[in-house]
Image 1 (cartoon, rainbow over the protein chains, first blue to last red):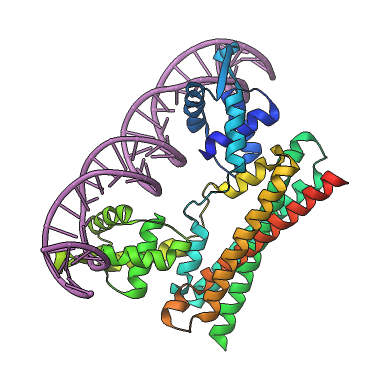
Image 2: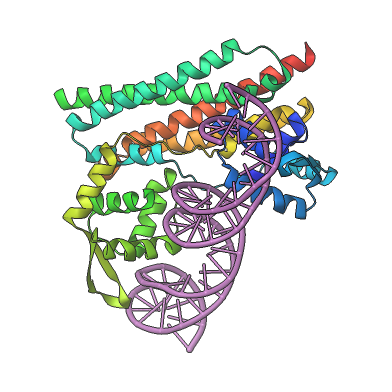
Length: 174
Length: 174
DNA sequence: AAGTTCATGTAAGCAGTTACATGATTTC
DNA sequence: GAAATCATGTAACTGCTTACATGAACTT
């Protein structure tokens, strides 16, 4: 369902597009929130057309097909967004690793956490640069709140990794 | 791979157990980090036995089978934990909804965010209670860092939802 | 003419969900 | 004797990954 909604969202925000276009739009925007590659996008668009959520336009050069959101598609996206029930099982590999972390010796876990903190810090810097650089265009506005969320996530993870390393180090010495 | 590692982790931490036991242990602990039900656990244990990561003991009452981690299993878990390369595609429905949020009118998105902030706040309270109540036992120590991470996550999400609601409200009025 | 980018797909396989199915043992 | 809990599984389906496959249209 999420993939569908992401595609409907992109088609609504930036207008009709081909599977190829959508694959690229995915990469440069919603990819930070939900990943999908072309091998998943093409069949999904076909199913969405069959379900009446999008229509397929004329075939352009190189067999290009253009998809447009239907009213039904708009309605479905809207309904999905305003539905509060989004209980989905957690599956967070980072959290799982955190869970299993006490199985390592401090000599192993501390450097590991420091390295991870570095990765999060780097990712954070990227997102902050993105936030600072982009002008206030339609496209920017579109992913604005998600970018803020991403920044908060990276900051939180960096701090957690750093402080957990400190805690383990302190406990090992104390 | 994650499911395997979670199972190896539980078997290492709390000793040999049956699929049934592991299903319950999952629910009460690692479930907050990685969800799995019995229909996924039973076949996975069978495959792990075939791969030599666990051994199956004598059948007990009611056909109960007890699994024990092998040396190979321990090694694999350890290797997985210390490997830095854990690039996996993001698939976060909450972030996707955040991304698509500007598609709603403030009249819809603001109450939605307030409600979500409430859900996160409630979940945060639960986790904080868990942290405060549990004595310093082996089991507690095991998931300690993960619990801290969970608390930080809920706090971050609550704040993001609340502050984004404020931002949208302010922008709509200003 | 060769290389790159545009553009679409399929196939095999792994991971996860939901529902179905069965029966033994303990507890009331 | 009935109900709850213990205990194990399978089957059909959806979602996702990795790799394969093809060819048209630009660009150098």
